[in-house]
Every structure is written in structure tokens, then in C-alpha cells.
Amino acid sequence: MNLDLTGKTAIVCGSTQGIGYASAVELALMGANVTLMARNEESLREAVETLDTSLNQLHRYIVADFSDNENVKHAIEEYLRLCPDVHILINNTGGPAGGPIIDAETDQFIKTFQMHVVNYQILAQAIVPSMKKAGFGRIVNIISTSVKQPIVGLGVSNTIRGAVSSWSKTMSLELGPFGITSNNVLPGFTKTARLNAVVGMRSESQGKSVQEISDQMESQIPIRRFSEASEVGAAVAFLCSPAAGSISGVNLPVDGGKTESM
Image (cartoon, rainbow, N blue to C red; front, side, top):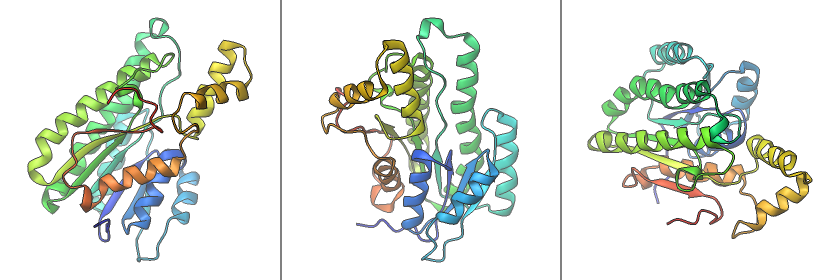
């Protein structure tokens, strides 16, 4: 199986912690030059230092604030002036605050759409030309199982994640002839700061302890545990490999079997 990404360059968004960082770690182990993209420069600098360099990879970082579309556009344009060849784009952005959809302000939808769909469009428009030139490209969006099965209490997130999935499928149809694939990885309950926030929210709303909520959530998963970020990162990295060249336009749940749809 060809998992070799030597000579390929990947940009990984939201990559100083959690699933984004885990994906960056796996890509580096497969030989890719990895560029981390997030807003905290100190965290970026620390994360870059931990990535594997045994194959003489050169890792970098981009400081960008995903709450500001113009900042993201400027940051990627500046980066590409110095490093014009990018083969892999991992889109990953934290979700909005939870709550019933009927209580969400319209501004929440607008801001979340801008942080996810608009930024992903900005990055793709900037990077796809270099993918076309190389005849090889991978776009992977880390979104949520809510694409297949909406999660109660995450109304805004459910809505925008669905939009990302549709965007990605359209990309796969348009870019396939150029050797570029576009896929979505759908994490379920994964050990991240985001999961901690969800557990805390449910604990408060239901008047139960954090442990009780965690046990209840794990009991709903066929494998009876939360996923590790590294397990999701491995799925992301595989979709970026040459071996996954015929996989495009799919939503891949990495959720321990919890999603009930096929």
C-alpha cells in the first residue's frame, strides 16, 4: 500500500491541538512537509517542533485568525508567495457554542458560515492551482457525524457542517479530472477539548455529574469508548495518501460505529 507522502506539502488548519494536530503528526510520519495554520503563534511554534523530521521534512506554520476572512486570505497569499507548491489541504475549524437551534441568533449562523465555508473556499481557491499543476491534490474537511445524524443541542453546528459537506462533494465533482480528491472525515465523540465542552454543557443542563454524562455517552457507542484523536488523524492521513486516490466525495465517520445510518 502506497502511503508515501515524501515531497508533498500539506497545510493543516486548527492544528495546535486535538484532531488537527493529530492529523499533522500522521502526515509528517508519512513523509509530508507540514505547515500548521492557527491563530496562536506560540502554540504553533511549539507544535511544529514536535513533528517528525526523520525523512528531512521541512515544517512551517502560518498565523491566521479564522474569525477574520480577510486575515485568512492575506495569510495564505503571503505563504504561497514563498512556498507556492501545496498538495494537501486539511480544513479544520472549531465549532460554535451549543444550544437549541430555535434560540440561535441569526448572527451565529453568519459568523459560523464565514469561519467554515467561506474560509475553506478562500483556502481552496488559493491552493487548488498548485494541486492542478502537480496533478495531485487532497482536500480533507474534518467536520462531524452531524452531517449524517444531527446532534441535539448543536443546532448551528449541525447546519453549517452540512453546508461544508455539500461544498466538499461539489469540489470532488469539479476537481476529480485534475487528480484532486475532496472528502470529509466525520469524528464522533473524540477525546478533545470540544468533547469536554459538550460533556460540561450536558452535565449542567441535565443536573448530572461529568462522569455520569461521560458514562452515558460511551454506552451509546458500539465500541464502548470515546475515540482517540490519533485514530481520527490516521483516517485523515490515509485519505491524503496515494493509496486513497479513488476515494473522493465521501463522508467517512470515525465514531466507533455510533452513527446509525449507513
